[in-house]
Length: 393
Picture 1 (cartoon, one colour):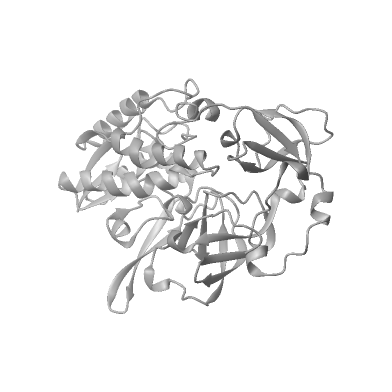
Picture 2 (picture 1 turned 30 degrees about the vertical axis):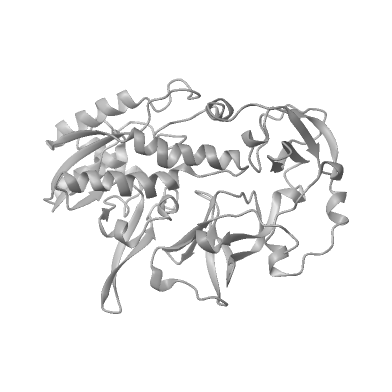
């Protein structure tokens, strides 16, 4: 099979190419450049020119053709513009999930097919299994064998069509074994550190990065005291239990000022610059319309925790559509709301307006704009964008 490997210059994609070459496939390397602007990036992080050099050296070592493709226009339109739009709305997006859905397994996939590839391979720590489903082949997305590196969450928005052309050669391996294989083969990327930060952008000073399009504007930091929750009526209905709290400035006291509510996310503790507290302050909510940031003191503050969450009907995605829930159905699954979070027991309730997810134990930092993904055993069945839900539905 002729396979295009997304060679990033990292050890994971390098070993993916190595294994495919050893298996007798016709392998070619494609290096993607998706970002040029260094505004807000922290010096020394994600230097794409160094990555390019290492990727070229790996391709030479493996004796495979090397191609360079610039997808920065697509990345800017499909991922970065989406990021700015979500932050402007007061939501916290996950660009890595979008990058996989819109770039790696869409624009990049099409470019690889145009070069004659039959499939694309990446260095993701996840697995794919093809099953017979009512006489037709269906692709299942499975967690990687390494529980510390499982990256299936980042692929939670892929479709059957995308998965049918995808290969994950290292999904059955542990990270230390991947590095051993790279070292044994003499690959230049064997000791390269894992990349961090935003996909293809790197680690950033987020307020500086966002100020390219979102203006700084002074607003109030309002502290919500624990007594606020004692005065609230009990949450009984499913809709109420899966809703976030809605605060007003009168619900707390002014603790300081900030330079833009859209620069903050739920659970954040750094950048508030508010002193005089025995325990750290954490962001528990933001309101971009009034430009207000609400905070609570301490890791156990009630405002940091939610019983459940809501996903609007239009945002529900099933990797295997045949596994989708019918309206009125309820199912117990394992759910995570961020990468590397341990899977949590939850019940999913499908209703006309969308999907409600009620956790067995309240979850910290449920954030609108992030993705919730649900699993049945090792299989990632579906995902959706968390929506800010009013408590009085």
